[in-house]
Image (cartoon, rainbow, N blue to C red; front, top):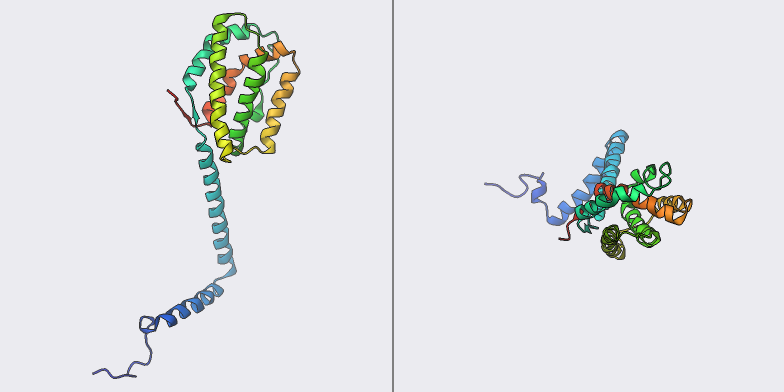
Length: 215
């Protein structure tokens, strides 16, 4: 028969709840204090790396929420039908506004939304308005593309209102370079040049955005 006091050393399971709670808080600092500094440094480094990866993942996921809901295939087809006629009017074949802009190809994910918004505004507010097209068939295609750009602007404006479309200085600098290139040419020539390079912008959208069909 077991009698009280026969087993003076009791396990943690037999201690009152308050004692278990106290023992946990006392033992953990003691164990951490016995860990070598090199191992502590590795643990802290891994923790910081994990936090950085989580933040990068959240940033990339937030960009994917800004879907461009439009029929990109239809826009590309419309442009291909007029591309040859537009480029035939280009009197400055050795000058470019978008084609050789390496900065556009190195845009960071955080700047994609803002650069897209700025380039849409560039085409809608300057290029399409500056271009004077005498041929009705070509004009209809350009108007169709312009309407699609207006719809994309509306989509990105909603993202901006939800603070998912941040504009950093890098994005502003890219837009300024494009406008400067445009201003170096006479207005009519600049508009034709920009229209002829529209496929560069469309390809960049396909590469950097998650696009859904509006059909």
